[in-house]
Image (cartoon, rainbow, N blue to C red; front, side, top):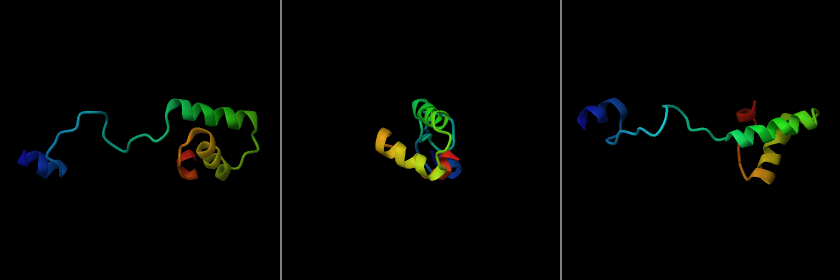
Length: 66
């Protein structure tokens, strides 16, 4: 346990997925964005998070989409 604490800063070993940041968007969310852009190519990048928030109840920054 001490070795794990020194290596990771945690006393519990997490084996629930690959290391790194968790994904905010699911495959369905990405497909929704692709459908929006394909249907109306004139969307501005800063409009897409508003549509995600209103229609999919996901709050993300536009740089996540970028």
